[in-house]
Image 1 (cartoon, helix red, strand yellow):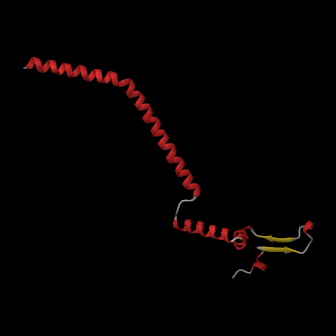
Image 2 (cartoon, rainbow, N blue to C red):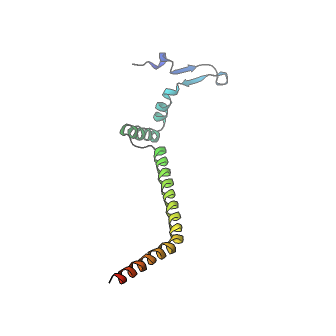
Length: 113
């Protein structure tokens, strides 16, 4: 078992505060101390630890995923709009070409009959 008094994780000094006196807590114990001070923070920690153990996405990962989805959809929409504009200009030429070949086919069928 870890003996915190002898471990160096907690140090106290009886000097006056203006001379560096007080209690020093090792950073490794800061979360445990904060959990002890605030029950809401303790529950928040428990939820995040549980999420990590389950392999669930963090808020940062969810945000990044949402940004990727937005950017992907935006790109597809932009490409779709570009294709719609291209169709608007190409459609008359394509329709005229179809009509021309339909008439050519009709002439060929009329001659063959």
